[in-house]
Length: 127
Image (tube, rainbow, N blue to C red; front, side, top):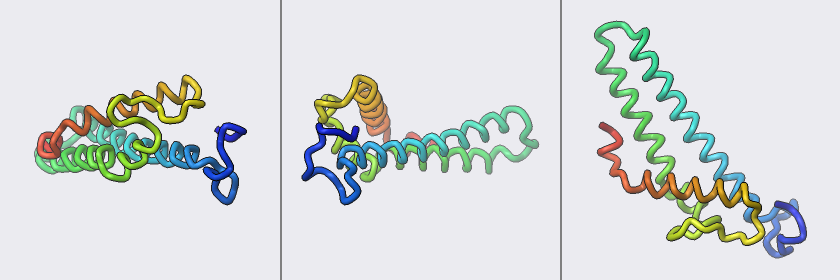
C-alpha cells in the first residue's frame, strides 16, 4: 500500500501509511482469533476421538471459554475500532478508494463476519 496514493500527512515517522498500519493491526487481530479457533477445533476433535470418559464437563468449560474468547476478540472495541478505520460499518465498502480488489474483498468478508458475530449475544456463544 505504500506509494504516491498515501498523502504525506497520513504517514508515520517511518513512512508507513496510516491505513497500512490499520490493515496490519487488523490482520494481527484476525490471526489471534484464528489461533483461538484452531485450539477450540483441536479440543473438539480430541473430545470426539481420544478424551477419557468423565472428562466431558471440564472439556465443555474449556470449549465455552475459547468460544467466548474468540467472540469477544472478534466483536470487541479493539477489533471494531480498527475495522471502522478501513470500512464503512453500514455497507462494508472499503474507505480507501485506491485499495486493490483483493484488499477490498478481504475487508468486505471481515466486515461481514464481524456483523454476523456481533449479532450473537455472548451468552449464546458460551453455550
